Image (cartoon, rainbow, N blue to C red; front, side):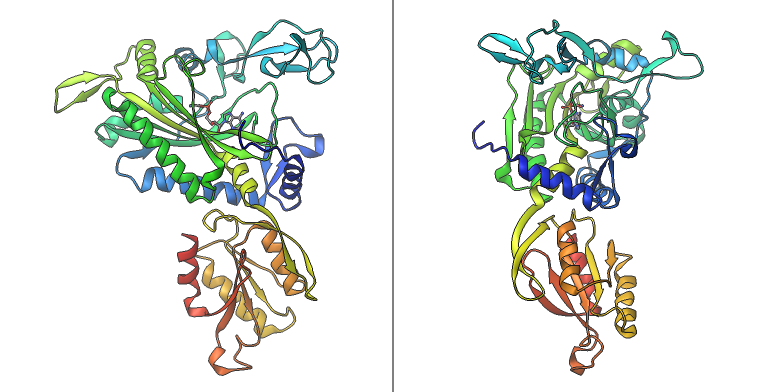
Length: 454
Ligand code: GAP
């Protein structure tokens, strides 16, 4: 694809940094791991939380027309029958009889008209057959057909089946939306590209209900809103792309779908889908449940099943995009002024796991340590801060650069007023990307930093 560049080396460095600094670990690692499953470490969990909080802020709190929901992961099996997932949420799968690899049919190589296994090159392949991506489980003590259900493969269905309850309790008028963030599970045949295609992941979904005639306009509106969102979390517009999904590739009930894609080091891939799903979902549930999911329009006195536009984003994919976007290597002077390679995660301050690190210049000078701890207590109610007193100051800066901390505050002898009384109770504030330092009053620090991380 045009402009697409694969950079495996960069991706390897990112994966290694994620483990080394505590962003992302392989799930069950000490037992050899489990494919397609990941744990977020102390820094990863902060990054993920910042992303989800910002999405919630923009999509729910800053709007009059959206409310939230937190649905259960396990739902009545009838939901998955009505939504079509039980019958059609499948990927075609092919087995290689030579190396026993289990592959998605679209991964099979076609060499001069002949099908070939991408793992061993073997040509002895089974016919494609449907593989349902939902994880099956049993509810209650008996494990038989009557107790079967599935771990939800998307968060959206809880929103559709609670449409009436939310409408009645929130007293919203069309158009309005219901937002949800939560886990989803898909038994992907081939999880790959680090966390990009996982078997357990989180989604941030909005179902925006509207009148039928508003659908196409709202599809455009939400595509633009979502592009703005990615820019506001620090993803360069030039690396975002909108794919207008063709009639052939779109779900049959959708009148229009955009994929928002990002240039990952492993290629251009989908971050989010924005789909106009018409009245398909609500109509299916109305039919299957026998309960009315219609909306009564006060003005026109008409009853109808609302249509829906759905921006559906992946938390894990966006976290991965944030890390890939932030990863930078530049040159900076070491303690002796010699230039060295510096690894920096240039996170937008809004997303950065730790907002500010506080350093006493020396750890064995009690007044410096006491002042630094005072600053920690001052900032802590407003942001996530980190105290570090060990090692040379340059090393401490580098450690924070590598995890993307946008600000560093150093308490030195000037802070204590030992050199110049005018500088008493001032500190050095260092900015991660420019490495510029400014002298600021401790009393102004909270306001200054909260404005920069908002
Ligand atoms: N309700 C619509 C829906 O679920 P989807 O395109 O299948 O649509 C939406 O999923 C988003 O969820 C994707 O754009 C992606 O960000 C994320 N997602 C889907 N499958 C994923 C997987 N296996 N691993 C990580 N994220 C995934």
